[in-house]
Image (tube, rainbow, N blue to C red; front, side, top):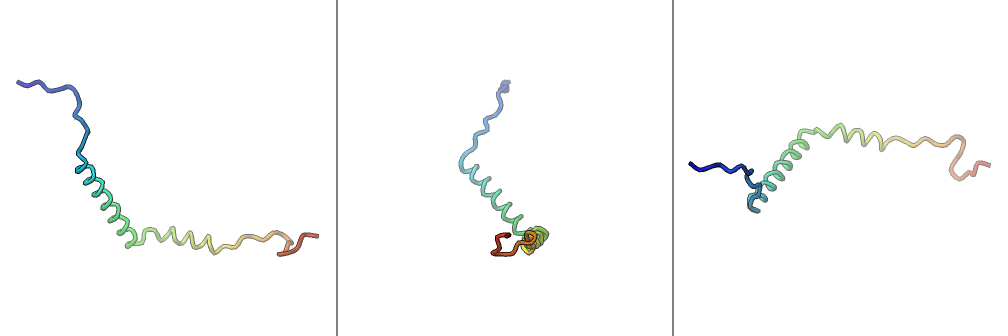
Length: 70
């Protein structure tokens, strides 16, 4: 009977396998982003950004544009 090695299996993989995994992950993320865009999950974020851009900054008391406060 052959004895089993006590060492753990090497985690090295071929470049072909490595790039295949990376490509699959990239495709998955792209698909998820496309679905999220289609369903409109980011609409809340867009509404918040628009509301902040429409707000006006408060003007300083009594100072008008071009006056030196004299």
